[in-house]
Image 1 (cartoon, one colour):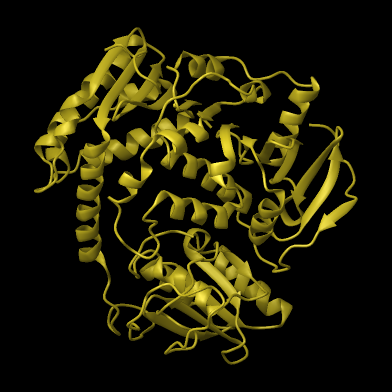
Image 2 (cartoon, one colour):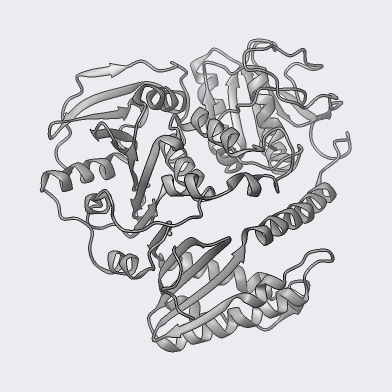
Length: 515
């Protein structure tokens, strides 16, 4: 195997100056759960999901702006993706459902609505960060025509008020309620830096010559990757390796998973750096994974293990699911580096997507909890016949107050605490995703603090819970709702809320999407 063949994968700390300007946002007071991170990852993930094509080379010098200390470096050639790849054919393999775009233009418009950036105006992006830090240190450097007004509107929807300060001659915009963890700046009319406030400042430092740019193991591993449309190098945190090994060992050791094979995953403990490349050669997509280990023996052991597991997985494939492509996966060992590659025609990927989605749909249908009074806490509510999207701004007549099903807007709410309230038509979309919506009609600050404290003690609420003020229920009451089910309780009796989350978070509704 020649790892260099074909084309492959791409995507700041002084004393804080005083704030001297602000931009008003939606004004909704909420508990922010790193909304900036969701926005950044939405942009990066959107680009990655659209990816396949050819490119390479630091055309605009964006990599030169990545600061030292980055243990994650990625590069994405956005313009080539959109210009050279028939993405519509891949989207046609997805189910024809309300939330699923059926064309690339529709997908791009959905992305614009969420992040305020039109990927058709972007040529290139670089993502960097350090997953081992506890402060969500991650940044994105984007080159293209930036519509700052649309960007600001999207950020305000997620974070509320924006503040502005000057840092080394640059206008730095920060979220008022999360100024340590979100910022963006424009280095020029075509270069946006967005992310964790330290990460953005560090890019400004590099540009000003006050901080070294990235170098060392991550940067070297990144540059060792073949040129291509998307490239990514990551220093793998040891705790992540241990969690992965433990999870795989537990899964593979069960009798129903790959025959209960005796698996030894100790060699994964020596995994140090992971690289990924995606590219295109003719009508085929090229996937490459590069694993760097502390020693050759571990690399060889993992290669043998993965190769064996792929053979077993192919033999145990569900009926109707063709996994013959697994036979095409190639393994190459060079010292302590294991390279895994696969070339797949786009037509085969379409067939694979359709097959996987069919299997997932059948599995999901068999796991849906049917709401009944005996199924658990709360009261079952009749599911309304319509579940389609309606135009945003249009009101819907629901059969219950608050609603537990029905038609809804195409947008949904992020997890959080919204003292300003949220429209029914918005949160019903959350219910469709399997989220739990807590509606309260409480004005006393101590009672609100009690509710917040109760939610903070429920770990599932962080990923599945949306809480809003709601004056259509009696005062001092709280109603907790899932798709087709609700439970009512007074503010002084919230004991049943945790068990409701435990029973229904991610379990009810046609879809399973954490907010």
